[in-house]
Image (cartoon, rainbow over all chains, first blue to last red; front, top):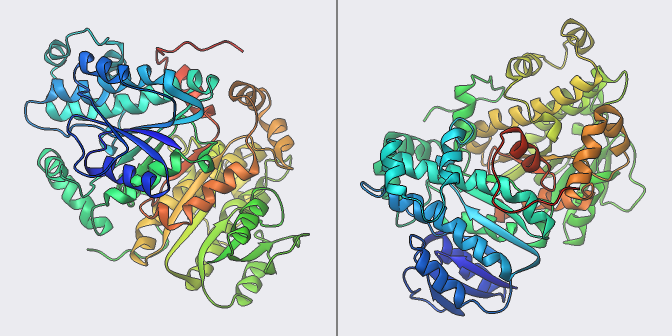
Length: 264
Length: 264
């Protein structure tokens, strides 16, 4: 098994790499920073720049059994344009370039986010973002559509989910499947960014299900999605949130429970 | 690992049992018919009858690490009441009775269906069904709400999805997690029932993704959901459909694609 992992230097990406290597698989890490642990191969990649994407692709040799798109930026004051580029536009461009190196039967896994859960409600804006090419002016798009850094993050992840769904059919015709995972509140170096951006809501969700998730608990789902055991999963998005969505939807839809719930 | 599997005599359930046994796990099969292959333990269970559920529960000894609710009836002319009882009301009653035998950290997996995908649109009727007790007159409920056998099937699966979501919080407080899988068009003994009930749509979906799914391809997702690797998945439903939902949603929402799709 030979796997390409973007964002493999830290966080969830690193956990994915370590799990694959522990199983005897070969990994190429694509990341803006070099991993400070042992990986089989490292290729520098800045997803916000087409030049960097092309340079990275030119260094790719041989074929891969999976591509895990884990690299992404959290919502941060002032990073609307950068976030949309890295999380969606660059990720899409890099993935399209990688298709030539993905073997028959291979699997693409994108890391979306529960912050992208409202993709259906926001589908028109998602389509507008998806219509942008790598050459288009993303800063102008943000300005025209009044997209701040929080909305940019959510929109980028909505687009990751919708894009995976939309390309599912073309990819399955090439023997490639594509899926995404949508984590919420994971204990990584960027959890504080989410607490800052989403405030109370994040803290409440963590309290309600007992704790934040662990990077390894997301990585193990990604590993499953690149394994033959998940062969019939195609074009789907899996929430990895320890029950946060279930708790919130049950409240929002006022669904009665039969089993008693202790208040926190 | 000791696992309880309803509907383990045939189809997806049997595949689940065989995979667990191949991994060295112990299985108790609960089914209306006795398995015609070797299982560790068999307890007769008719999910349409509270008496049978209670008799089965009285024979349970020791604890389990997982409960897989696979038993279910397909849509068949005239089976509206029976389908609602087996697929939802009896499954819920049996599951509640099994809670006393589920160990800390255990996992419940329910087999719902893509036919239950419209649960949000039908949430008021789902709530009405969920409000029925085991003693209520289900035939009368069907009559009053003009529920035919096809709608009964869909409603039963909508309720399985919603119920799992609604009980997620109470269960996670007991250290138990609950999830469901929603298969579409699987090569089992009841695939013809679905072709009869849903007609053209089922055939088109199968053609579009190349084939129907295999029971083993659903069973491997269920096995993952009872494994520690899926620990952070709670209260979710996973589509197991080979891309059928993604293809249909992309059309319905008119999402543009960048990669070319060959027409069939």
